[in-house]
Length: 457
Image 1 (cartoon, rainbow, N blue to C red):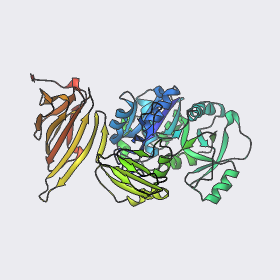
Image 2 (tube, rainbow, N blue to C red; image 1 turned 90 degrees about the vertical axis):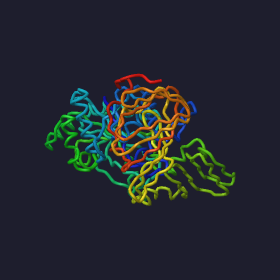
Image 3 (cartoon, rainbow, N blue to C red; image 1 turned 90 degrees about the horizontal axis):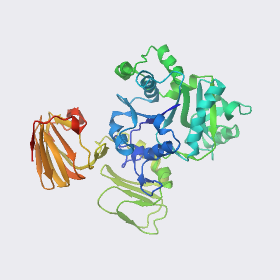
Image 4 (cartoon, rainbow, N blue to C red; image 1 turned 45 degrees about the horizontal axis):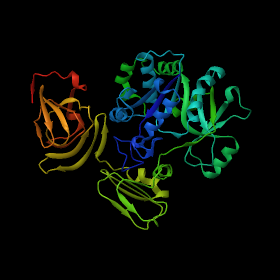
């Protein structure tokens, strides 16, 4: 069986820590068994490893998240990249063609799809593994996994089974679905043995390939990538699941939680405070998450979430925190913090002058032994001031050694890269007519692939 974890999200629900580049699954606000900060994606990948399933797992995501995934769980993870963000049906269709035409997976192989960020206990993955057996024994086209509800939630969709005893492998035939009901409706659904829809399902690869063929779509990954922009923005649930009649659900009677809002996330945090600040003891049921270098002080304020990052500051009543996505609907700001495969950076300052020139200042941290890609920019120059550490810099195939206090000037059109000999911090000042990612022309990612003309010490 192959597992595919879907990693998407616009980064609005846990603003200001999350943004378009750093969605909720990458926030290191949980705690690992060793007591270290851990993100949701790191937790899930660790659990997959413990279950012996990581080697057969893939992550499907957009281009913006690739480097952050590599930074958090390593460069060896198998990543399937969407050309642009659409919805779960296009993403899963592209995944199917990748498995078939690139990875050489047999059409008879069972593929399980699950979110990249479920907050679950280890038995959850044992149930995922049973879905392969369920499909084999029942002959169903689709197998879903449903969570046995612990209360009548209005936040989740429900899977309603047909009446009758459980069949082979403990699964149930599916009758229909119900999106986010009222509390009263949820109570009635639970009486009918309805299950929470946790977004986990499985199918034989050939089943989905047949659907794509029926729609006239190519089964070749590269060809579907070229047509990706014309695929409908529709969920897999609406396009496939709710149209399928031969479908079963496997109940999961264990711990499962969606940490999709600030109030649910803070319930699972081991500490009330993360980062610099002071909270008085009479600040009851209040959580502080501060990524800034300045302290935040909370005095006698209860039932609050206070979150601060380079992207902004949020102060909200815990119960009202889910409203953040609606409040920020028209909020469009460039991400002020990003993690990359080589480290991370924070935007310190950004100015756009009346004549159109822009200046952007970043504080960049590059981890020992890692490098940025060999690249150039046509619409901006850069100045690097090395704050700490030692590094090697390549400018137009010429190698330079730099250390704390050195300044590197990179004019427009200059090929450049930097390799951290030790952990390195630097201040980068960009100046030009347009400071956008699209102005980056990359020649190679690996330091050893850069050809050198001469060595300059």
